[in-house]
Length: 131
Length: 446
Image (tube, rainbow over all chains, first blue to last red):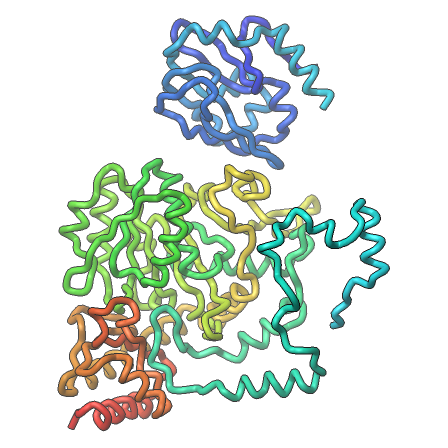
């Protein structure tokens, strides 16, 4: 069973969000990284840009598939995790820690309310697993 | 090879299996008014003997005039070794298997092709080839936008108009705004370029030597575009690189070229070979296939397709390019050609082109009514203002077994009295003197 820590917010598209004041840290969930398997490249095209919730932040490349990373909230993408340029597989080994992908400055804090909590995301991941 | 049609029994089984009564029902979704009516307008069946006779008749209508035409496709010498190696059945008949790594020999020559092109261009990365120079250049527009996140592409008026047509076609589909930088005295106008460059320009495209054969001021162009953080895309003649600085020397970000000059016959327009090179840090934005060398689990050297996640079959609609193939056989020809000539051979070929084209240009410009369009340095091709229309010179030339050049009036009505003349290492003094004698006798020279 995938690791789904309490205290984070989650999206239906398998991103996690950690809130600290008006800044959020974003990554992909343990479930998402295990579905993708070996991640080889992360392209954060939205770095420095203003985005709306559900906009594409960039793409995550695994050996056999490429998936989009979506903005869990609206705001400005302020930072990318530079260590992933050399070791993108950190997203596989430590998805909630050293494998974080981007930081954003929130423009609509109320959007956080609509995100999933750990229990709701666990239910979503459980259903996705059966496909 | 036999043509094997579906028998009535095949058709019955197929339609039954997919649950339609007959072929008519299968096609019912296609509106009647767009279907072909009656029989196709094709000749009847013919025997092998009859077909051979027909093809020989067609082949006999070819003529082989002495070629002074270029404009992107050049009559360079084809060393016999190229055809000998390319014609080996291991290369000639094989199609890349879908498990590409099964064909280690194919991957190895592709890797060597990439390595040779990198060395020739002095660039960090070369892909496994594109269809031709035009498609390679067109792909770079999208690549540059993807790298810079800027929209606009500026194109020098010195780009081959045939290439520009393809660039425009790609640009239209991708909504790329294109601007044209005019020429001044035969080369890209640096003052206008400086005005046109702003922080929206993703890249500029320059051809070097340009469409009229003239050598462009690449160092200055490079400095101007890089000062605005745009990319420099250059299209070069690979056989000029034994003499002219390669793209890496003037800091090009993306460099393309037409590989036809490297051991590939003219063949009425194709297949040709697109060369595409770039910086290592842009490798993920580069279109096309890429072969890498690695070590297998037993420590043995092996070759694999690398970075396939850039490509359409994995990235799908997010891919930056739809090319999912390469010109393998033409790339092999270029590999053999480059390996056979080596750096000294490439340089010597360039020196011949340079010396011979300058001899002919000087002789032509001495004829009354003929003058060079530009006074700037050129490599192997030059444009000439002519006292009569270029088309009339070309027509008269063909009667004398001389292909006198390319009529520039095909590209712009104001250039109808201009002819583009190319001289490769194959042309002899005798042939060039014959050209001069022909111009003298037909068009009023002394």
